[in-house]
Length: 292
Image 1 (cartoon, rainbow, N blue to C red):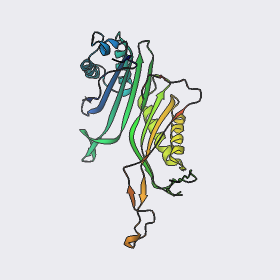
Image 2 (cartoon, rainbow, N blue to C red):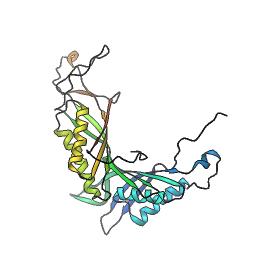
Image 3 (tube, rainbow, N blue to C red):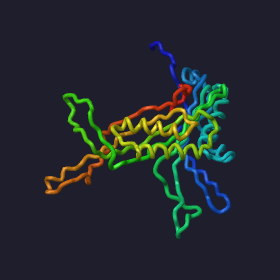
Image 4 (cartoon, helix red, strand yellow):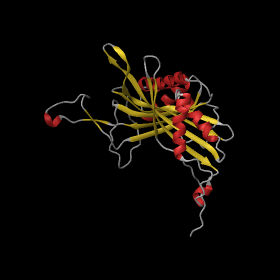
């Protein structure tokens, strides 16, 4: 057998699906979550010898999610994730516990001119929260959104780029710009007003996308991150991933038709992928063990 060491290891329970119903008096409120737990620490024995003495079963982790939902509720999801992460970080062999939550949005169905008290339709976009707690008490919380699709039909160009022997793309002064935003932001203060912070950051992303005359999606990414920092003082860093959802003008000449920027092919792939982080000047470095 070759000489080998266990260089890195973690384990947990992935995609614990949870629907929480707050029944109230007459109007119900629902929270639709997907929870993933990751634990790391002093656990080499289970990998090297199969000794499971220090292992908290992933089934117990799943059960903890459901029990905590009943005991404490699940909103705001940033607090729910932090509570779970701190609980798991108290396990003797665990040095780091991370809990990532996806919250799927729902709104009431309009029935008879009024919102129905207990019927809902699913919304686009996903609210996310990730909490990483350590055995020494440190906790880092990240909030964000996934798959928020934005499009502008004007106000975007792409010119002056490097050309090599394989470049066929023509520069353009006017193009469709569309993306599915993945934006996560790190919180510097531990207890902001979570719902207001989320709403403000999400609005800042969309407003910057709309207001920025885009010379490139890279430039738009920076403007969006900068806007979140300006809107929410508790945010110290924003990480964005923006796929460039290409739209190509269709040549209708063979059919005897012009196409003054009205008919496009919306391509699924391949696509450009633009990623970056915008950090507030002087912000402390983040937790290197936090995977967000």
